[in-house]
Length: 507
Ligand code: AHR
Image 1 (cartoon, protein in one colour):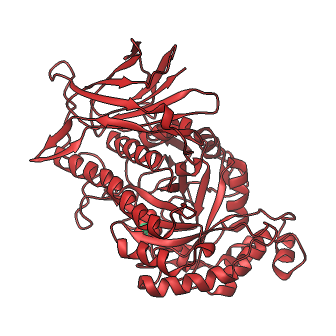
Image 2: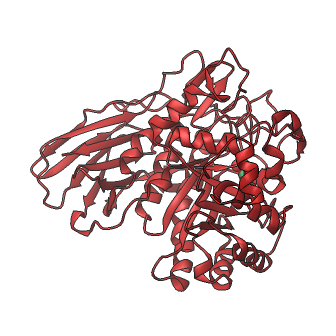
Image 3: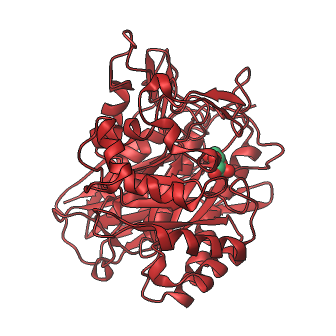
């Protein structure tokens, strides 16, 4: 049973305060924190991104939906990870190039046991990234592949000279290499990627990394080691201790906001208890990045290696009647809250967190886009990511925060979350989230003596926590102008509605 948000007139607002520390602003919020992930899973690729070149009813470019390309361009999606996830360690890239009619099929053993016909492969993905304007992030097969297969993929996509792989690429229709910089060395090596120990994987990583080359890319590869499962700090310790820093550009981390893996609960129609439990998991990201970063600091005080949170998001039971292996779930105001608080955490830790990938882009888990045949909708999560894209490549402004608690069932969480940045034009952006479903927040922001002349804002909120967009009503939830922010006496006064996300711009 879901519950209604208490109208602000019935419950008094809580008081919070935020202090901008403009004079301490120095670190850049890497735009890749706003990255996404597309796996061969359910309807993410097939019937999601890709409808096939022969499709005459859904407008597409080389088989990729034009409406998705447009929506992701508008989102300013900086980086896209592919082809998995667990799928990556079963994927043999050579099966997905060349004439489609000649491509072998395989069984997608992790996700529904369906037939993968390899009709969407390397060319399709990399050309699509070019169209969207996103940097590709290829996850290579370590679990069931070989070093040779991995390095040949690099040669195929990156070598400008004459070689068996680059010649094959040209024969398949692509003359110039794509210059793929970011490579994942396997995925979840502790689990679906091979059930390895950290120590064993670190050795395997060193072996793969030794033979990885940028080919025409000046050897400037960005190699990401498969990372820890949430709070497995030993994993990060071993990666940092056992892998030489000059062989490593990123260490991954995966963490999902899931209540209980055996009882995840529904994506809509959830209780307040379930909402609270989800938010508790989402906010745990603060502890995770703090503790993983502290371990990395011991071995890498200059912060050469990035913490790459290349899978995060809410994970619930699949929608009733859908394939359990397809991970299709609705996306509500609860997901907007997850996105808002998580992105604030990443922004505030941008000295170490330099890439993150929401799981997943289309039709899977906390998707930003859902499709149904020719219809497409943008989820509340899409809107949060779009509102927040003002932070991409901006300079983080550190903040102090004094927040009331959201108390439920004898437990409590911070109700307000915030991050702030200054962009290249000198404008300041502040993203605020109130996860409290029943109380508004009166927030006083002190501005470190800055003389701003104007404030404007955008708000995402809705009457009920499980409100969502549907194919019949795709614009039920979308950002609207926010007028409850006023500059007065060198401070900013903001009234944040219950369960809302607000992004302010100060000039
Ligand atoms: O995102 C779905 C799955 O979650 C990925 O394939 C895997 O890496 C993780 O366990």
